[in-house]
Image 1 (cartoon, rainbow, N blue to C red):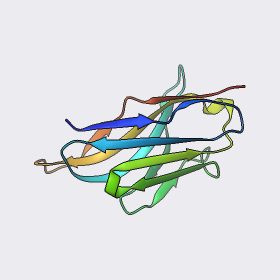
Image 2: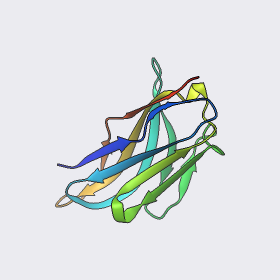
Image 3: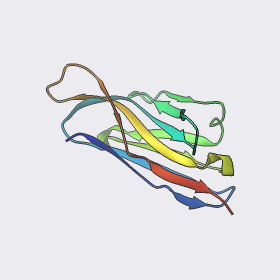
Length: 121
């Protein structure tokens, strides 16, 4: 069963850092773009950053300069390093990946279940 599992969330003080991880597992032929989204209480799910299989990254304006998106293709894992965290960064962070499963001739978008990030003193 193909799945994405996030880890690394938690409680951090303002100005602190966290590194989120998301590992894809299962019957995978290839993974294309991977990315991170976040959803605060009562808000829609918004894009944070994406990274292609070749390592090209894209960040939203609110993430630029504070966030680094990286991936290890050998481990089918994407990372989100977040620095200088602010209370407004508090949200559930979701991993997303476009994956071609084994035996399937198209990409399918998969979501993880999310990891909570709380920035508070």
